[in-house]
Amino acid sequence: MRNPRNEPLTADIRGKARGPAARRGTAGTPVPDRPGEVARAEGEAVPARAVPAPAVPERRCILTGNHDARDGLIRLALSPDGDVLPDVLARAPGRGAWIGVTRAELDQAIAKGKLKGALARAFKGAPLSIPADLSDRIEAALRRALADRLGIELRSGMIVLGTEKIAAAARAGVVTFLGHASDAGGDGAGKLAQAWRVGAMAEGSGRKGVILPLDRAALSVALGRDNVVHLALTDAAAAARVTGLLGRLMHFTGCVPACDLAAVVSQDAAVANDEIDTKGE
Image 1 (cartoon, rainbow, N blue to C red):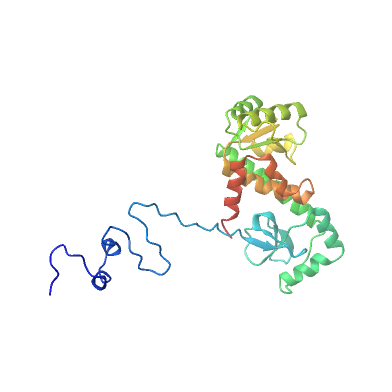
Image 2 (cartoon, helix red, strand yellow):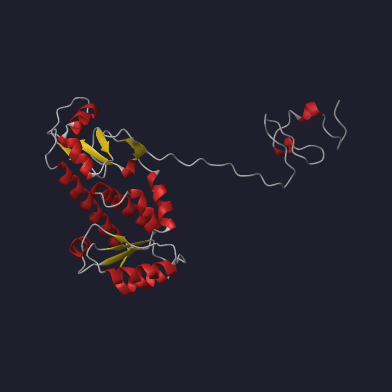
């Protein structure tokens, strides 16, 4: 027998219905039909589900056994001739080994034979040869990678050069990273840092530019300009790319722990750096 028009459906019939209307009671109240689901009044906002942050790729240092972010370590690879060479951009094919130590610690590990044993285990007993100047090669590769990255960012329009232009950009609040040549004068660097703090409304924060491990001659060659003493980045992602390489170089040479760079970049750049660390193998 059919139900009269407008008569509410019984519970057993309602349970067989399909579509959004099937999940509403006679008074317009949603009816939960899945375990653990809570009925909500019509129009009530449903809280967004928390999205877990993507995992940061990690690698294990073969000398210390410590795990760290992939971009914070240095990869070593084998050449076709069996030579152990730096692969600072992690692009060489085949198996690699990762180290997260300073140059002084690496030299000590080489002298005591610890690096050779760790590499033999990492490369499964493959014939290998450790160059006597491995530390020099790693530092040179890190410096070259940093210089190349600065050149790319300049060609992409992310770098401002010239004291007056940098000061104007800093006061406008668009600078995300401020760098100075290793032989830059203290007065000029201090004035630009002050303009940066004012533009970022961060007076009293102690934020200042980074003294780069490159002198003005090296910066001038890297950027293809004459007498480059100061530079500023105006994009958070670009600042993150630069500080990633800079942090590894400064840590390897013992200048400053990579984590301390967070104190000299903008918050936007620090966030962008976290996002970049979660991408790629």
